[in-house]
Length: 368
Image: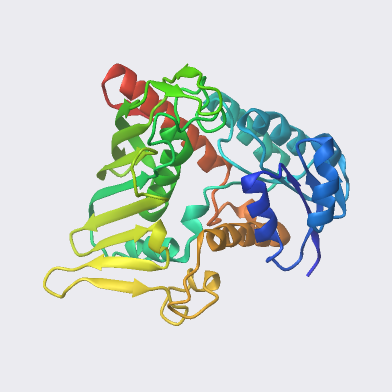
């Protein structure tokens, strides 16, 4: 197995998780870490295992020894870093959003395709083994004809008016719950259905239009959503609905997708991520633990422990990166059929946000 050298640009919360995941993947070497400030370099060099620690993302992108760039930076840096990496011929594993605008996301996607690089956007929830199993069972018809898709993505992080930081609640952002977590539900639901969302009817709610900075007491007007409720229609016509909120007390990271068919109903919940709930009429309902010996062939490679040895959020991230690096190493990304989310899916995420914003403003269905 030949070694692939990676650079992680941005060592905040998500960058640290990329680092942990990459260290679990055979044949991947973390060559460079890019930190935010020069004064962060000594501590990072002491704590992390990497050949180079720098505060220059340009240095990492220009390094001929690096094959893969992980873009874990704030949103405003996604475009310039992705475009520079593409120009340098690097493969890219990027955090969402693809771009600050849908037009920008499309442009980056087109450039990546033209350059012939492998590209991924970190919608990692689809790479939970139970989600892969759910998708496979629905595809082979176990649910029957899908009648309705429902779900939620609920958190509690900004439920109080004093839950404010500029990073958590940017004052200039038109969307927050929708952009931060709603796009994950949209991608996961579209993935298990095998078709994307085609149109939306959305309502957006700002529960705390004035928030208080607990550090300074300053009052801040906020216009982005605390909660978004959306009805959807998938590209095959299947209807559905979901609620996304960051103001629901007691919900830590409650992402759930249900596909109700005319034979069975399948439900997956992120907080019980190794379970599938299967609803039956007349037979009793089932809770199926993920087990390699009973999983579909496409699911089995992402199961490493016996049933009951629950995987977690980090394992889905590792699964996504494993699939990505396998595609890079084998060249299969050039054929297009990959399980992880690509820049094409990132563009769909931008379009989903735009359509929800337009629908909430106009009070009508909007096509993606």
